[in-house]
Image (tube, rainbow, N blue to C red):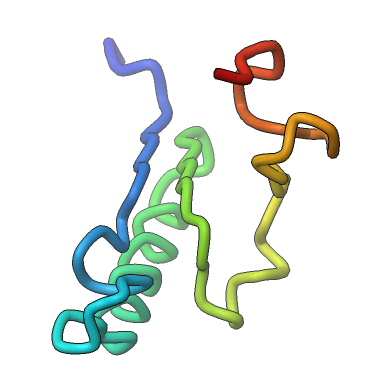
Length: 85
């Protein structure tokens, strides 16, 4: 019980999903990762899973809690709302 109860993953598609290089783009791997993360999130009702991803698979779009625009003039800009550098 020394763990805070959350897991944060950022950039899970780096090099496998939303990449410009067609040779390294594999949506099957991305779908598999998301299915695994969904199963992990269902193991414990007290654990929170946060996944940061610019291009989630379409089947997980309804699980999106917030979308950041990346544009300081169009809130919400980003996770740290006063950082625009």
